[in-house]
Every structure is written in structure tokens, then in C-alpha cells.
Length: 508
Ligand SMILES: [Zn+2]
Image (cartoon, rainbow, N blue to C red; front, side, top):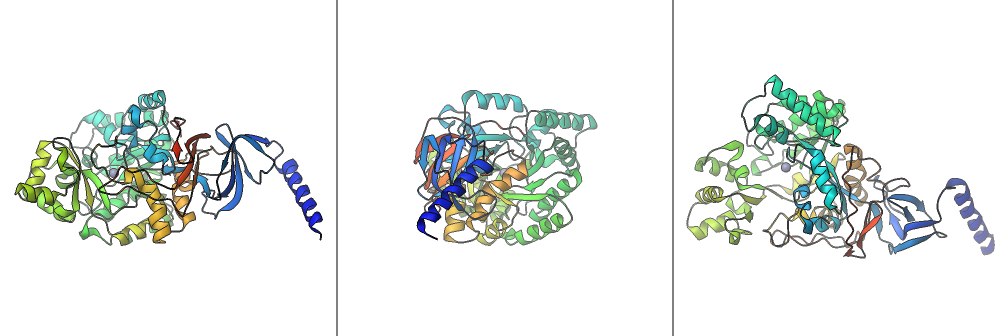
């Protein structure tokens, strides 16, 4: 066959595709991304294609040589994937402050949707929260949860007892209202007051109410180490709630906290596998760091314990000792931020236990706590049901030393766990950030790169994407992402932020 013949066959084939397969396809798009390696989020490997965007949706994916567009982006052979979904985020607290509305630390890593109100927290009135978020505008999309702890507190304060029948009915009604207001499910924080005061049956009743409205159940479990029932039993509680309430259950930011619990991920994974084997819908999410973050009080005096040096000593040991605890925020004395508890104790000439109690008495201190093993992190990450998350917040630059996950969790998964250490493959990692969370949370038409889906898109170089945020210099944007679109609007343009706020408060 001559070269001319081949050209003609190619032209005829191209016309045929245009006329027969995609007759309604516009030849002019609002945005056209050319020369891309498209990874659709399903777990499939990339393939070369162009992506046409019309309005807020993806209009076409394929060879779009003849198409024109108001805006053409040359992907320069980089990957184009669906925007990343962060299923456990504290960013809703910060994003309402005008300088943080764009959520640049999230967009810089390709996060286009985050799930708010985790750990049983957030407001009870989700309609009001939605209105506040919509009024000021936001960079990424937000999906809301209704928090068990907040609902419990609204009905019975911080009472350390079971609810009466009437109280439980009022809590169920608040969960139902949250679901009617567009929540994607119920979150709980059973380690924290007042969630810690609840028995499993109460949570099952509320998870059922969420489930009846199509929602799921996601939990900061009762114990991530060996504080009370132990991490294995605490993960089993999620399994039991999912099973009895007939809902999807998520072990959130799954980990085995503290040297005495290291290695227990294998038992948690075995129990989740066996639950899935008998038909229980259990999932997990995870952020890729060996340090967690919480308040000094929750870490060392959990469950409302009084100021007792012996309790502090036990819990310090549990968390790997005073060297393993770094002060992140401490309003009464900003100079302590970035120092370890042992450094502060040495400087003051007091014991670490005494020092911790003094800080707790002075005000609320948040900490970064190094307490996870690499083997557990790797084992959890390789499970097919594990979604990506950050557990991060949004704080103004210069405000303390937050956990670097705020700025780096998604980039770090791709840089460290895919590229450097080969713990998971690139397709697997992208799937854990896109189609998996969208499917589990029931977020319609997101987490996928196909015609008809919302145009939440990320263009990045998989050889260059990198978290820059460290424990000592945490507020550094991730690198390697060139373009981000949210609802068809360019928010990151060749590495520079636009001023657009196209994010939406999603509805289930
Ligand atoms: Zn949590």
C-alpha cells in the first residue's frame, strides 16, 4: 500500500469516526487540551488523546485534530487525569477565610474536591455551611458530611452516658436533616469527646439513618493504637457498623499508631478482607506520612482524663516518647512551634510529663506526632480499597508549623510511594485519588475522565510531581502540576494561579 493510500484511509477513518460515533460533538470547545497522555482514573494505563471541554463538562476525548477552542492548552506529553478527591480533609475550617478561599495548597497538588466535616465534627446545620461556602466562592469543590460528635453535642452536650430514646430520636432526625441538605454520609470520631462516650449501638442507629438516605459511614476509629480497645478491635467496630447498618464503612486515615501497635495492619487488613468476603462494604483511606497530627491534650490526656503525670507518661510511651512529639501550633508562646517536647522540657529543666501538662494548662497546643511504621503504611496503601486522603487543614502562611500533609499529601503519594519507592503503581495511585473515592462516596460524574463527566482535570508531569512541604518548612506548595481545571475553569495555568473560584458545594 502506498503512503498516499494510507493517508486517504486515515482521513476516511477519521471522518467516519466523527460522523458516526460522535455526531453531536462540537468541533469548537471552550478548552482543548492537546498532546496529553490521558489516564482516566479507572486504573487503566494512559493513552495519547486530546481532551475537549465545553462549559463545565468534558465533551470529547480522542484525536481532535480538526477541533478549535477558545483556549488551547498544550500538555506537552504530560499526564492528564481526573482531578483528585481528598476524602478526609479539615480544609473547610480555613477555606471560609477570604485569603484561603482558593485553597492553593490543594489546587497545587491537583486536588479539585475535598470531603469536609470529618472525625464527627463540623456544623450540624449543613444548609448554613453550604450557604457560607457558596457565598464567598471557593477554588475546589466540597462534599459535606454530617458529624456524629456535633449531632450528639447538639442534643445532649458532653454528657458521658447513653442517650435516652428521645435523645436518640432527635439525633437521628438531625442526621436525616443533614442528609436532606446534601451530605454524603455520617462521620464519627469515636476517639474524641463526645464521640468516645457513645456505644456502638448508638452509632449503628445513626449510620442507618445516613444509609437510608444513600449515605456512607466514615470513622476516625475509637482507638488507633492501644489507648483503649486497641486498633484491631476499633477497625472491627467499623466493620460491625457497616454490616449492621447496611452502609459503606470507611476506616479513616487507617494506621497502627505507636511502637506497641506496629505490625497490626496485617490483622486489620485480614479482618477487612474477610468482612468483604462475606459481603460487607468496607473501605479505608490513608495519608502517606509516618506522623499524625492532633492536639496535645487528645494525645496525652484522651477521653477527658484529668492532669495526671502517670497517664501522660503512659501515653508518651505509646506515641514513641517526647522526641516524637513536635509542637505545631501554640498560641500562648509561638516560639515553641517547631520544637519537640523533649527540647522544650530540656530548656525548661522540667520533665517531659510536667512540661506537657504545663502546656496543656496554658492553652490548646496542636502537635505533629511521629508514630507510624513504614511497613504498616506500605501494607495499607497497597490494598485495593484504600483511598487517598490528606487529613490536612488550610491555615494562613506563617501560622505555626502545620503537618506537611496540608500542602503535600497527594503529591507525596506520587513522588515517594510511586516514583521513588514503587510501593504502588502510578495507575493504582491515581485510581485511589479519583474513581475509587468518587465511586465510594457516590460523587456523580467526577473522578472519571470521559465525555459527560465534569471537567475537573489535572495536567502534571509524573517524573516531576513532588511535595516540597517538610516538617520544618511545611507551608510549601507542591511542584510538578502545570494545569488544574475545576468545573471547566482553569484555576492553575502553566503553574500560575488564576483568581477563579469555580468550586461548588456538591450534593449527593
Ligand atoms: Zn481524624
